[in-house]
Amino acid sequence: MLRLTPILLAVIYGLVMYRLSVWRTHRALDQQSTELADARLRQLTDRMAAALGISHIPVYIYEVDPVNGLAAPDGRIFITRGFYRKYRSGEVSDAELASVIAHELGHVALGHAKKRMIDFSGQNALRTALMLIIGRFVPFVGPWIANVLTSLLAARLSRSDEYEADEYAAALLTKSGIGIAPQKSLFRKLEDLTQARSGMAPAWLMSHPKTEERIAALDRLEAKWDSPKG
Image (tube, rainbow, N blue to C red; front, side, top):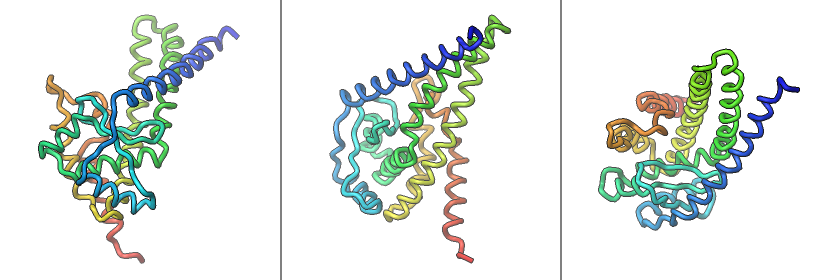
């Protein structure tokens, strides 16, 4: 029983962190967001809604500065105020911002938003268990090793989700008549758009696939769609 104690503690810790993370996320989004009211973007989101067979895609502005889009566990789509400012200043087009919304819709439709919260709790549980176990054998660097291993696993899972959401967005944008070109052009801008003051990209971007790889994946997808059916 004593040997299982670290694992049990890790599982309990993971469950507590999951509940706490969901609560904090919902509270922050509820308190710091308003529904987006932009006529040009509404035209594009209405086209995507029609392609999906639904009446409306509610998109919200999340009042934070970092350039980002996100899908909440409850299915809502958010664009940060910082991203919206880039659009209003002309640095990002309406079609490019629509491609972000389509991407986040992919995360919702494919179950990534909810899964990520579960993954988060699982990662914390795994990190805690590894710290307790590895720490017995490598007392001083054990926690560091556990953190690195867990971070590598999380990044790999996140990249897989991004590719799937990219593909979903490409299909939706194509069906909506918007096309994939804005999706690709935005990828080329992302690194500059998300630069922090220190000159380094924010942590969330580190877990995303490289720009060239995402564009290449879309090129392969287009070639597949354009190839004659045999």
